[in-house]
Every structure is written in C-alpha cells, then in structure tokens.
Length: 87
Image (tube, rainbow, N blue to C red; front, side, top):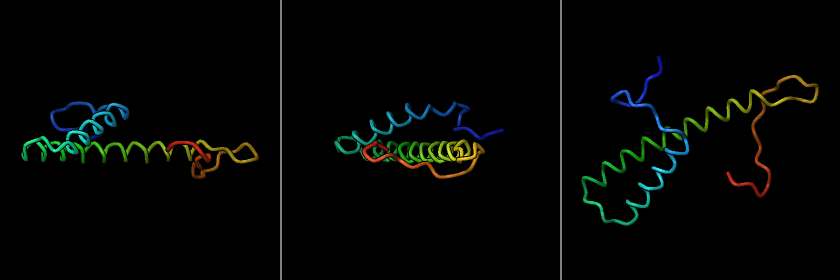
C-alpha cells in the first residue's frame, strides 16, 4: 500500500501542489510571517517540492515508456522539449 501524507489525507493533485507552493513562496518572500510560521511554511513547501519533483519524474518515465520508434515498436527514449516551449 503506498504511503501517503500523515493523517491519511490524500496528496494534492500536481496543479494544486504547485499553486500552494507558489503561495508559500510569495508569503516567504514578503517576509511578514513570524519565525515559527515561516519555518512551518518552509517545511510544507519543501514537502510539496519533493512531491512535485517525484510526480514529474514518474510522468517522464511514463512518457519514455510510450515513445515509439520508427518500426512502430515501443522504445524508451527521453522526452525532448521543442524549442520555444515552456517547461
């Protein structure tokens, strides 16, 4: 059984995690939080960053598995960004 966050809550979707991470970054950059709140926000942000990185790595592996070679067979190859695309 996969391990989830403490308290049995499900992990947020990638987009939700990124939005929350952005909120945390803005709050920390503003510098208006008390020290204890800043530390909690930093810890939450670190956990969200790890989660997002893990989800991106999983997605990249899935893309690699689905890429096809010239003969129509499946061939693992890294996903390449097109020039001008956002990452």
